[in-house]
Length: 162
Image (cartoon, rainbow, N blue to C red):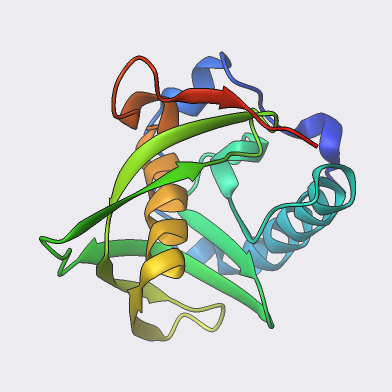
């Protein structure tokens, strides 16, 4: 079982790599990957008091997989984003890979995510606001993009207080 020590930190070259598609033959592995993602996310919540979702590459699992747990656990296999709104909003983004740093970014107000669930069933979900931002952040991890690369300008960084 992976734990907080397995989390890749800012500067690790793997965080900048594009992840590989999860193959149908790998579906039996997804449950274990999701358990590892859940475990590390709960440790982050306990230590840093944030964390609603985590992408597999953050643990060095270079697969297109996102795990989210807000009201219930959700697994997004091979997600694709589309119908990105023209309207944008700004926020201070955080990331488990650099938990004490906040980055000012712009995100789309709304998106649609298409994905396979843990039963390999095709799903889609339209998201707005903070959930839209959350899935854009996690999707970026699958593409090898960190929010530091999306900073609005060179002054868009600050330390988390408290």
